[in-house]
Image 1 (cartoon, rainbow, N blue to C red):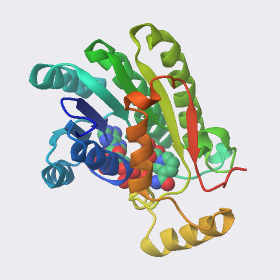
Image 2 (spheres, helix red, strand yellow; image 1 turned 45 degrees about the horizontal axis):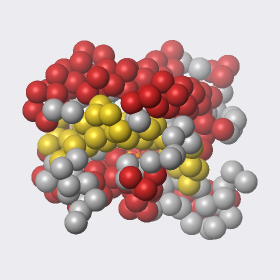
Image 3 (cartoon, helix red, strand yellow; image 1 turned 180 degrees about the horizontal axis):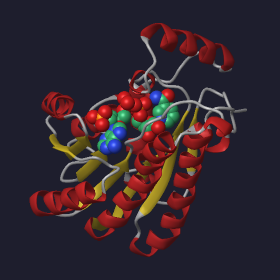
Length: 247
Ligand SMILES: NC(=O)c1ccc[n+]([C@@H]2O[C@H](COP(=O)([O-])OP(=O)(O)OC[C@H]3O[C@@H](n4cnc5c(N)ncnc54)[C@H](OP(=O)(O)O)[C@@H]3O)[C@@H](O)[C@H]2O)c1
């Protein structure tokens, strides 16, 4: 018997990386899966590969989120699983050199967008549903040149824990997964070329006690666990998946 038979799962940012791996995991376990993203062609390709429904929706746009809510509600009814994953790193800079554009795009996608995705979708969540928030180890680090990304994920963690309290009465659980370095498209999208990504990955691997980067298919299993009945006593928690990097 598949774990998520007759369950409906919405994954924001499901066309690549961690979101795609989680979407594939939910689909392989029998869920009806809906993925979002901004790039129509990438969404269509990913949705076809895993047998999901792909919808273009920018998490930074409240009107897109409202449309997504109407569309998902009318086509699929209530949700069992909401995985708020879409995010970007933005560009690196010291606080003294900060740009308003970078601040707005990172905060609007990672925090404001995630916040209003959860807010709008609460009426569509079934009692007993599971919400997973994709944060990052950077929510609890304070590295130079990463102030906006770090603050966006710290704010997200705060929201997730408050939501866990507010939604517990409906047995809706809200948990946080905070990855350390995983090989995905995220750094290239931030404007880094292949060589720079290789160099950063080599440096990161050296700084991780387990001497490797994370695999998206593994973190997908953890996200899946938070949506199973076996985790019915777990809410408002954060699991850090970083090979010991932040110890
Ligand atoms: N990879 C890591 O090492 C790592 C570590 C810690 C945390 N994270 C977090 O993990 C999450 C997933 O990132 P990833 O590493 O899997 O990178 P990725 O491969 O770039 O995936 C990001 C996903 O989010 C979507 N997305 C980005 N902005 C969006 C927006 N405004 N509206 C809707 N969808 C949007 C992307 O689709 P489009 O490009 O089509 O919009 C894509 O599907 C992010 O929240 C990231 O901060 C990643």
